[in-house]
Image (cartoon, rainbow, N blue to C red; front, side, top):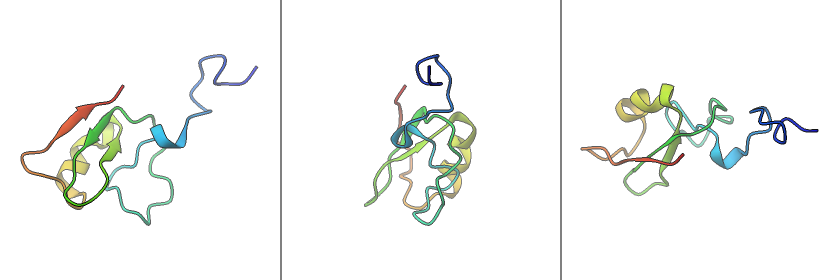
Length: 74
């Protein structure tokens, strides 16, 4: 039985992983926690972040709209 089958989080899907704290394209994999929020950005793909990186991403990530557009994704 894999971690995913047993409900564990070690087998996370990369697309659903946090891209925080800043969403840089050169960031090697982000933090790896499950993403719970999507932050809209100008002329960039939305930034998917965990609750811990939501605040820092709003303040420091490139292209974040103001007022911010935040969606709950999970």
